[in-house]
Amino acid sequence: MGEISFAVLSLSTRASQGVYEDKSGNYLREKLQSFCGSSGDYFLLADDEIKLASTLEEIIEQKTDLIFTTGGTGIGTQDITIEVVQPMIDKFVPGVMEFIRTKYGYENRNALLSRGVCGLAKRSLIFTLPGSIKAVKEYWQEIEPLLAHMLQMKADIDSHGRV
Image (cartoon, rainbow, N blue to C red; front, top):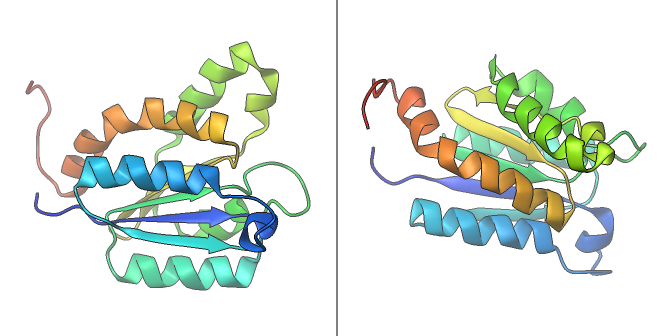
């Protein structure tokens, strides 16, 4: 498949102002560096629809393989990630986020409030994760085992039935 490119976009006005460290984005960046074997791109953005949209459009045009966002998936007035990302997705993969919400919703009903989505925008796989480090670790635990197969499917490599 070749080198796998990735980008992490963390949405947090307070973290972008230096009020606190972006633990979620940094955690994802480390996990993706290990998975992809490359450094990838990292963006720490304020909760700004225009900046998020322009950054995503640029990353998608670069044919980045994996794009992960953190933050902005809730129902608050500053939670704008889904409204920006959803129109960019050509093919939705709803089962990934539905499974995670359901699994962790049994333990903590608040997990059901995440509106995270997963899908393909042109040739980029996009995953929108909540902003909390606990949630990001839980999401990664479920997504990481799917990534190799998703990347093969995206590249039209038929690996069904193979171990």
